[in-house]
Image (cartoon, rainbow, N blue to C red; front, top):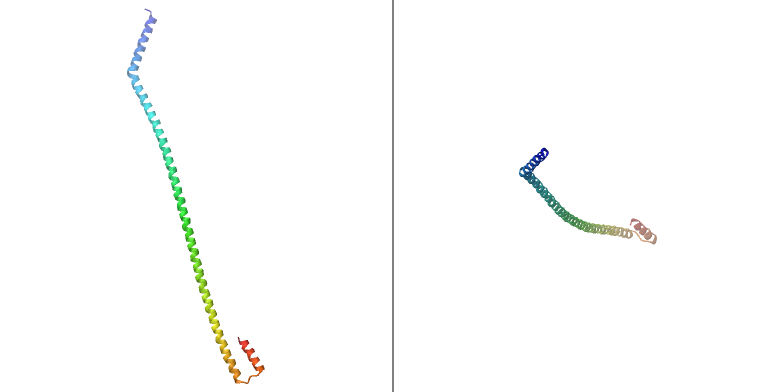
Length: 157
């Protein structure tokens, strides 16, 4: 036999033993580690997909809550505007009523002052008439005296 053939046969046997040893002892743990890693990667991808779905659902829920909050805020603002308008209308009505009351009081005061002035004027006119009548009765009346007396009474008024 040829030494090269023997070397080749030895190398083949060694190689076969190496393959058998690798397949028997190295390959199964290596394959289980690879399968484990593939499973972890698949679980990670599934978890990422679930997280994205959950994120999308949460985002939709947040958008719905924001819409609800905005509509509630707009409703509260509208109610506040209505209440403010009611308060303004009530204040206007109160102001108008107070103005009317003040005007009525002023008119009553003016009427009372006018009545007092008329009464004072009547008293003065009656005093002047009595005074004029007394003067007329004390002396004899002639046309010039009468005219002077009337002018004097008119000047006192």
